[in-house]
Image (cartoon, rainbow, N blue to C red; front, side, top):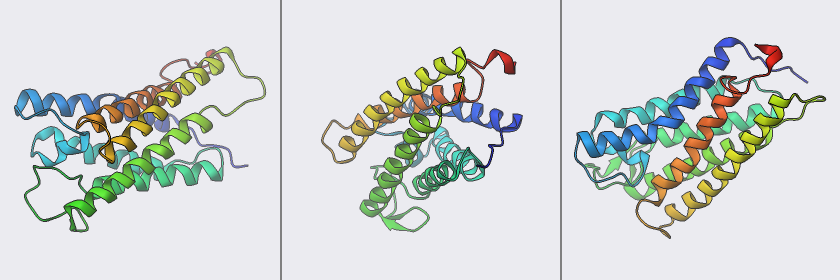
Length: 215
C-alpha cells in the first residue's frame, strides 16, 4: 500500500479549505444582502450570477478544491479516485451556472448551455461532489489504526458527527433541487454541508485535536 504524503504544505492547504468551507456561504449572503441590497440568496451558487464581488469567491473556492483534490495522494487508490471524482464534480459546478433570475443571456456557462440544462448539470455536480466529500470524511478520515490515541478517537467522533450533519444536508439538497421544499432550502442544505465539512477539514489538518506525540 502506498503511504500517504502529508507534508506541512498539505496540512496548510487543508486548513485553508476548511476556513473557506466555513465562511463562503456567510460571506456571499452578507455581501448580497447588506452591500448590494439584493434579496437573500436561494443558493450560494446564485451569488455568482448577481454581479456582486462575493460571487467571485465561489469559482475561487471550487477551483481551490479541484486543485487540492486532483493533487491529493491519500492512503490508497480508492481514496485517490474518490477525491478526483469530488474535484471534477466541483469543477463542473464552477463551469455551469445554476438557474437564476439574474442571468442575462440565453446560453450560460463554459459549455454555453440553456438555463435549464446548465442548472441540471450544475445540480448533478453539486450532489456528486458533496456526496463524494461525505464518503471521504465519513469513511476515510475515520480510518482505523492499530492503537488509536485518545485524540484519534476524539477526531473520529468529530468526523462522524460532521458526516451525520452532511448526510442530512445531502437529503435536504436533493429535495431542494427538485423543488420539494421552500426557495431557500438549497442554501440551508449547502450550509449543512459546508460548515460540518469545514470543521472536519480543520480537524484533519491538525489545527485541532492533533496527537500530542506529533506536536
